[in-house]
Every structure is written in structure tokens, then in C-alpha cells.
Amino acid sequence: MSSDSQPNAQDADELETAIDQAVAACGGDLRATVRALIVANNYLESEVSELMKAVSHAYVRGRFHTYSG
Image (cartoon, rainbow, N blue to C red):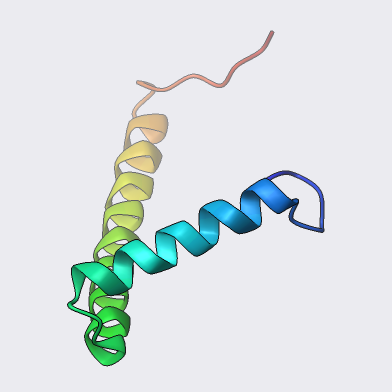
């Protein structure tokens, strides 16, 4: 989405298309769609958590430097 607080028409159209694709991928079953999205979200949250730990560990070890430009 754009950085504006209000989504534009193109963002709304893309979101509607993504919704239609998700529902179609689950055979039109809305409960299965929600279930799949929750599973995917949980997976992504765990990935973010692991990446944050890795970056923090690397930063403490001096392997990661902040951008100073």
C-alpha cells in the first residue's frame, strides 16, 4: 500500500484481486481461506522473530554495522 493513510483505487483493486485469489485457492471455502492466512501469518511472524534474533546477535558480535551515510 502507499504511504498515505487512505488507500488509492489501485491499491484497493489489488487488494480485492488478492482476496479473490486467496478464496479461489481454497476452493471458495472462506473458513479454509482464513485458516490458511492465519497459518501463513504465524509462519511469517516466526521468521521475523528468528531474523531479528540473528541480526541482534550479529550486531552484538560486531558483524553488523549501522549505516552512517
